[in-house]
Length: 258
Image (tube, rainbow, N blue to C red; front, side, top):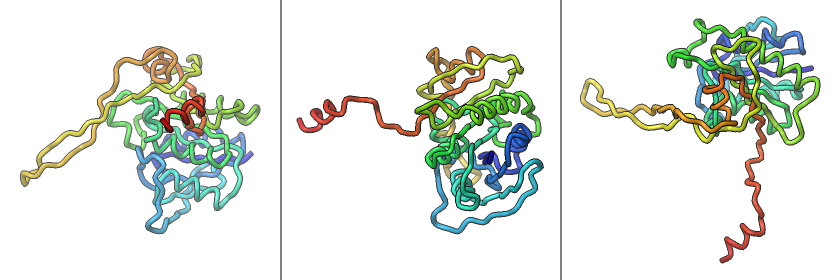
């Protein structure tokens, strides 16, 4: 089995190293990840300059490259360089990736990119209780339980494959989880954050702006956010990358010609 691992927190993040450690005996592990923190990069690609690649020592990996680009670039590079994989893993990300906002996530987007190439994929994220941890290397965070669940899900997917109609799994692990924490099959919540812009003034009196997110507090039962935030369960959400709405096309056609 050939397993590709990436992580939008970067190739030096402890979450990526924990992912490699969790699955290194389940197949040949190849790592291609950004050299720098690339959170919230979505499916951005680097098209207007060349990419630079650097060999990096990642214990447990057959080979590892750091790329000065985006998570999606890393998957494209890996497929061009090493061809086929049996599974792609993106994570373990610092901070949960929930709701339809996973399209913003570099973690989920890397898994989506792999899935568009027919590779079963897992995006896995660990909830963090303090915002300052989300954009670091994770030196203060314990990844052992998230690694436990990653290994569990990986073994199941390598053994049985994904269910028909499922292209990837989006997994979120509570920060207080134990090996006995229940797993919940969920759907995506509508949204996790409500972005806004804060205006501030620099020392010269000029305004500048930060995009910030206000967390939603109420979630519908059955969603990933409800399972993680309310029930304190590991949420596993099946994702299909065909975003076509399941509607009667004839009715849509009639609407458009009136």
